[in-house]
Length: 342
Image (spheres, one colour):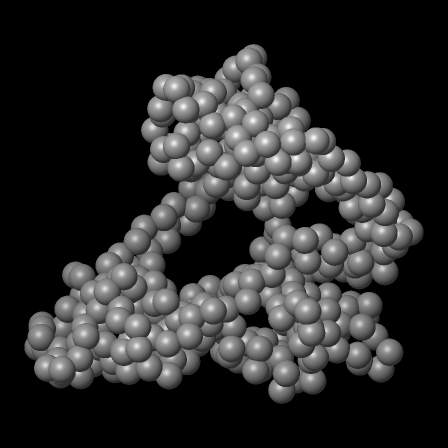
């Protein structure tokens, strides 16, 4: 917790002032999380101070909140392209990224619980930069990083606003942003290290970490749902007369599986089909999800493969049935698109 507040002081996030009478004061709270490695061993205890963004008033505490986020398809294309051109990719994780984004609105927050100033207990903090939990925080961080990269000569993508490219003496430099994660690489590996040093000049606190393995994510998802397994599969429909189940639990399972589809397109169709029934899940829908989990249990190492030197060709396949979806009798199409060797 003290380390988190030290980041606030170093980044000059806020200033302690007297409580204004005619301003909305947003509360704050602490959020704790234990980060684990692939063996389930706790490697770091994280404490994050967040603002209670639900108390913000539109037009007063925030305006535009949209921030571009890289799509999984864009990251897949980046990986395929880099593999074809033998570009070594690096990942940079920016710690406390949102604390680096400047905000245009006048925002006040309460002092952190447990760390109130004993001499000024009724004072509040006026924010100079974004705080986690604020609705405009992701946009503020993206705009700062975007402006910095453009100043360094990068060109922003016309279709994908999170992709930045730069030509350096015939060497192609690519950089993809996914919130507080930066994926970058260059045909000249030496220039990749220079970008890391260049971003460090912004005084960001960053660390280079390895990508989470596909197997680790699969094992984590199954371990959380280890008590569910089934050998039954039925054609899904609304099942109006079926027995209802816990909605929050079902939605949590679907959310975990949707995250995994980034590297496991083989379960994409089944997971998306099950996700259609999150509003009113029944036992039959849970049975289908159990079947997906059982499949994952026995295939933890399956994932996308990007071989070096593969031909960069775009191949596609599609198929559809005729009003096969029982709920609304619409046709369902399926397809597969491969960039490189299938």
